[in-house]
Length: 259
Image 1 (cartoon, rainbow, N blue to C red):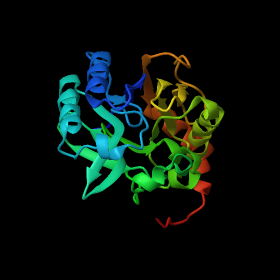
Image 2 (image 1 turned 135 degrees about the vertical axis):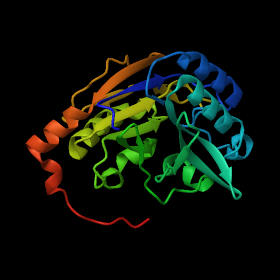
Image 3 (image 1 turned 180 degrees about the horizontal axis):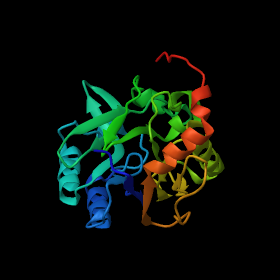
Image 4 (image 1 turned 90 degrees about the horizontal axis):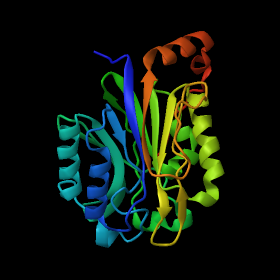
């Protein structure tokens, strides 16, 4: 049975550099007892955007995944966010989605950020992943993926596109513009959750987390550079109404992707 509405909590927060335990405690305190169907955390929410994978990587049965499962069950909400994962001696910037039943899905960041040398440390993902939660089809992506519209193209009729990020203040205008564009071109809700504060490399992050409807209108009131959680309510009828009325997705180009 599909929910007519979905309440999503956008967690815009600072992160403690390369300290998974401190970040888990901080995040758990922030989300404790909020009422939402889905909680969205930033990219690399346990460490910040680090290239020091050998020191901070965790296996899929590690402390953070165990904690995510426990927190999801406690809050009765699905949770998504990315962290550094080691698997078969390779490192991944891996987005994890866990639901209250304990089911886990993951997506490995497709577009590693070459400007920061991410491609030298982390394996790039090869597969786009969608998951369905409470009847909503969701496409989760990570930060730099936002710059590549072909990868996000809505050929699967998903309802929500979600980006988790550590997107720096110096290029925040691109973040603002592209989030809105992705909503409009894919006729889907588009949500972006970005961190705030300084990281261990002294890069500054200014938030600008946001949620857009299928017409590119903001449906949130999140302050730009402040630690906050905002819950936005998405409506299935909104998607159906404008896809039927405008029909833009019916004219989309057909193509296949090569990894």
